Length: 117
Image (cartoon, rainbow, N blue to C red; front, top):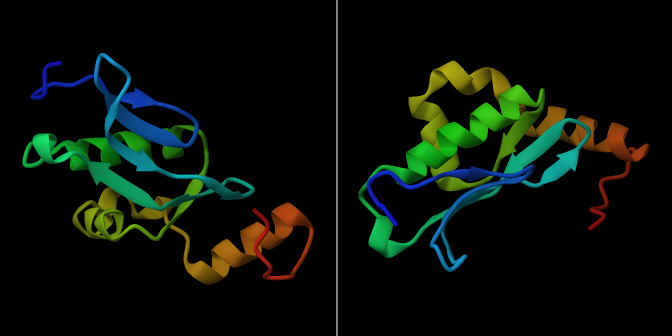
């Protein structure tokens, strides 16, 4: 694997880099939490890949995926929160927690705040 220019893969709710053997070495998870709403909940980069700017590249791929699919996002991952602070051009994708709660309730048809997993 070329660690300086790895292939970034994109799924519906995850962006990742994996080794030839299928081991995921870097990822951003953004599960669906409501109608048209995802939560960027976790960013992880293996130690051997740190310092190469890969977390930022994964975040850019993540927000582009979210934008292209017409979704918006809640952000609970500390790294992602910091990344958005440095990339105001993507702030339009963010929803505040109150708006997110309303989007979640409309998706489930309930105003109850009970989490359904």
